[in-house]
Length: 629
Image (cartoon, rainbow, N blue to C red):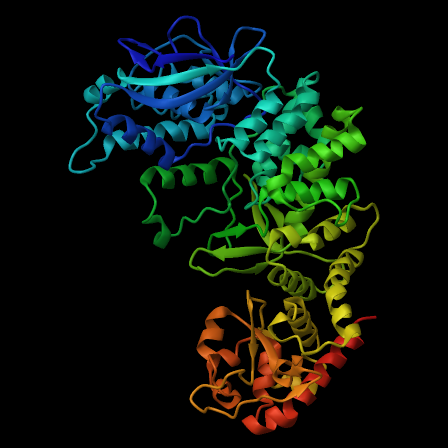
């Protein structure tokens, strides 16, 4: 059975970190301290605002390792925040009461704090580079919380200390021979804090426990890759970045080079790199605390990589980290669609692959996977679209950019250029990928990303082959549509048919005289998720005559020639208006390219219903057929 002990956070002058000889260690598979201002302030508020004889802060789940230390399985963020909070309030304890496995910078910072209680932020020290930034920021948030007036007053420290004497924590020891991987799974099923990718990380690191260098390198790469909304290079320390990606930060990475670096420099760790997604323009900084602004400014000065394109820029990945893990797995085992893209089955999917193909050599699988993950992430950042947001842009735009480096006399600076495709059209690639993104909106069906990454990872593969692989997936549904000749599917017509047709129309914008006058150049793919009847199914208020004609039992108004894809907002604005009425709506001028053609070629409601939709459909189907070879 598990042993449960109730711990006092503070008991007189003693604290949870000075009671007895207890020592807590954060295992390598756990991520580093990541609590920000919101979480830390909530912790302080919860303690300060309670009004009862006792307040239970939650549970700390631990496993006693062979050295007698408490290995923290769950609750490490709260425990580390308490360390910073109690340090700020002036409590003291011996070194190494809390430590991070193989994270020297974090350990140095925790021990350094012991002599720096109160408001001391240890600035202007000779060993600035040894400080873990996330821990320093945690203490800054605490200082700010106790300094800012809320409800007319600042938090009274003496009252807060008194309340801490009533705060308790459950420490739950799991049995000594517990299968921790299995325990993680149980916690996850019960809805505890661990996410599936945290469980998976622990599972994959377990076979590497005999080689601390490789295990540490694995953790560094994993933690870097999990941050999907930035470029992977910026998630490594300067030495690691150059070892992995070369002096220009743009070479295909080699996991073994990171291992070599860690072997030579055991204290070199992954650190909080520049958040090149940060937005520090005058307009936006009014929403940030002074501490957050100071953090971003100091990071810019320290790591020299913030991106300035006149305005600050941030990016947003089209998939989350669990889905990226699944795509990488499919690339590694050369799978197309057999393995599920279901983040809810992340651990099970990996378990099945390991059991069927790598059960006798789990260490080999872990190393192969982390190498593949690093390579895929580098290629993903460079060649797969994302959303790009400038500091004054709320909607963002589709982006295909690669990280570049400029060298000055004193430092290197990162900036972004449109990705180079070696002779291929950048615009074609951007349009094709955005076409796929808005067509397959669920991450569970984005198999095109797997195919694309497989081509990019293949030795000697050409980018043209990678682009062709995306087109081949797009054409699967289109070929079926053309071959079956069922052109009266109405709102059931697959969205990829409309979007791929728009892609082809856009490519033909300069080759067809009829298209040149319609300004196709400003077209962008958007999330248009509603299929609209240009001539309405149920005309409103006698706007036009009902169209009840059928062919083979199907309504002609459901013909592809009378359909277009629009956003739900536009669908509502169009309502059941007539084609001529819709033609006057500005939405028709900036909508899908098929919609623009329908609008341009509509002269009257009757002409469209009797003949116009047929001519339009024939032309569009012919364009699709011509591009199916």
